[in-house]
Length: 264
Length: 258
Ligand SMILES: Nc1ncnc2c1ncn2[C@@H]1O[C@H](COP(=O)(O)OP(=O)(O)O)[C@@H](O)[C@H]1O
Ligand SMILES: [Mg+2]
Image 1 (cartoon, rainbow over the protein chains, first blue to last red):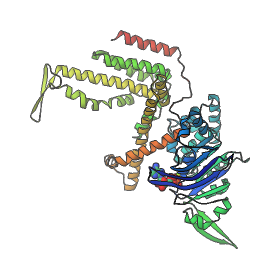
Image 2: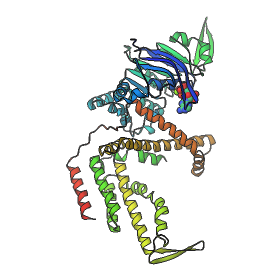
Image 3: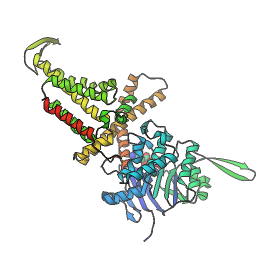
C-alpha cells in the first residue's frame, strides 16, 4: 500500500472528443508536497487541475486519489463525494466562474454549508478569514461588482474556509498587484511549513521558485517535458524559452550570468 | 443592463428590513400562492384591482422603490397584450355587442364590448399576478427561495434546473455587457446603444455558446465545493407571531373576497 495523495498514469483527455488537452501525463504527488505546474497558455494546466479535483475524468489512463480510483461512479456515492470535497479544494482560474452567489459572504460560506459544517464554526472561520484577507468591507457586496483582485481573494476565501488537506490553485496570482501577491504567498506558505498538499499552476516563476518542492513543465503538446527541483528547472533557460515561459535577457554582472525571466 | 442586473440579482431588496423581508419565507410563499390562486379564479375586475392595490401597498411597506416596482411589473404587459389581449378585443375572437370598428388594410375589424372587458380583465389579472411574483422574488433571497421550494417537496431536479436558469440569465447578461464594452473599446469611439445592440445581436450564437460554457464551468465550481443539488442557507427558518398574524390576514382576504 503506497500512500500517495495522487497517482496519475498515462492520462489522456480531450474536450468533446476532439480538442486534446492532456496527452500522456504521469504524475505522483505525495501528501504534503508543494507542486507547481508551469507551461504556456493552453498547455493543459487547468485541465489537469480540474481532473485532480474530480471534476473531469480521463478518457484513457487512471487517476488515483488517496489510493482510490477516481471516476464518475465513485462520485455518485454521496459519502465518497462529500469526503473528497472536504479533502480537496480548488480555486478556479476565473473567479467569475467560482463566484455565483448574490453576495461575497454567501459565496464564502457556500462550501462549508454544503459540506455540513457546523454553523458556529462557519461563522468563526468566516470572521477569521475575512480578517486575514482583509475582506470585511466586501462581504455584503455582490461579487460581480468587485475588482479582479478582490474577486480572487473572495474566491480564495471560499475554498480556504473548507480547510482542505489538498489545496489546488489555478493561477492564483494572475492579475494581482505585488502586495496582494505577496500576501497570498505568505498565506499559502506558513512559516512552519504546515502539512497541506499544495498544487499550483502559474506563469509566475518567482512564485514557483518560492513555493515549490517540485516543478512540472508542460509543453504545448500537452504533456510533461520535464520535472525537477526549482533550481534545476528555473536555471534551464533553454527549456523555459522553448516552452514560452520567458524572454531571456542575459546580463553579465562581474563574472556571473544572470537570467532575467520576463513573464508573459 | 447593469441597472437590470443589479436590481434583479443582487438581493439588494431582499436584504432591506421591510415587512415582507421580515416574514418567514415559507409562510410568505404560501400566502402569495393563495393570492395567486385568488387572482386566477376571480372574474371580478374590482377584486383584481383591490388585490393589485394590496401588492403595491406591500411593496411600499417593504421599502421597495415604487418606480422600480412598477417598472419591473409593467415591463411584461406589452408582450402579453400583443399576443393575447389585443386579438381578443375583436369580434372574430370574441363575438358580442360592437363598440367601434377599425379599418386596417381593407379589413373591417369590430371591437366588441365583451371582448374589451375580457381584455381588461386579462390585463388586470396578468399585472396583478406578475406583481405578486415579482414581489416574492425581490424580497426573498435566491437560495432561500430555492430552499422553500425544496421544503414544499418540489423535486430536486426541478429546483436545480431553476437555480441554473437563474445563474444562466445572470451570466448571459454579464457576457452581453462585457461584449458591448469590448466592441466599444475595439471600435474606439463611443458607439450608440442601438448599434452596439446590433453588433451584440449578430453575435448571438457565439454568445449563447459562451454563456453555455460558462454555465458548465460554474456548475463544476459548485460541485467542487460540495454542491449536490440541495440548496442550503445559513439561517434556519423560524416562524414568529408576525408570520402567523400575516397568514391569518391573507386567509381572511382569501375567504371573504371570492
Ligand atoms: N471547454 C473546452 N472546450 C474545448 N477545448 C478546450 C476547453 N477548455 C480547454 N480546451 C483546450 O484544451 C487545451 C488545454 O487548455 P487548458 O487546460 O485550459 O490550458 P492552460 O490552463 O494551460 O492554459 C487548450 O488547447 C484548450 O484550447
Ligand atoms: Mg488555465
